[in-house]
Image (cartoon, rainbow, N blue to C red):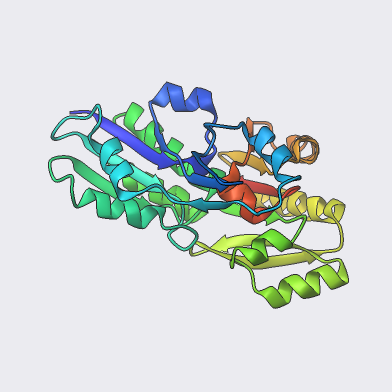
Length: 275
């Protein structure tokens, strides 16, 4: 019997690793200028953000449907196969709930639907851990994934508060005060929800705070994986990567966040993820 890993398109896993491990990625839906399409299919992320800067109506996103999950769970799988579905935090998206509802219709597969309590590479690193466990034939796959979930640190340095307030994931009052005072928040994820972690006056100080905290964490424990996600901010992401590379000698994943995450964080946003 095969073991298959399924996730959603907010995981930001590099394409070569998706192909290597045979990960099945279910995309979010994007509604943009009267057009509905799947994340990553009609536009590259860079093309999307370029068009976004000139659009009149703000795009919306929606999670994959129950029917789409049923199709993914059954297509190219066989009765008895084990399917591990690891998805964006249920506090940030309805994706987990859609997948769980779909599992009720697929009784002849051994389905595990798991809430990552995270997003972007915080989710992606849990998916990759599951793939690594499958490769080494571990008997405790979800226990090892859960251990990663407990250790994940995820920080968003937000360049513009407008989008994240509009999405309802940050109190409006904080957005108004932040814009008035020129404050840029660093957000983190706790129990799957976005919360305020720190406030800075400019992006440079925000980067310094992220790197300083990372350095302190690296002194206390071995860091296994490090990633950066950005929203139309490749230059800032590269600056952060170079700063981190002076502390951490392993691979630093760099991903451009798709609209499912990027529309809420806003253009110029950066995320630092590690465990």
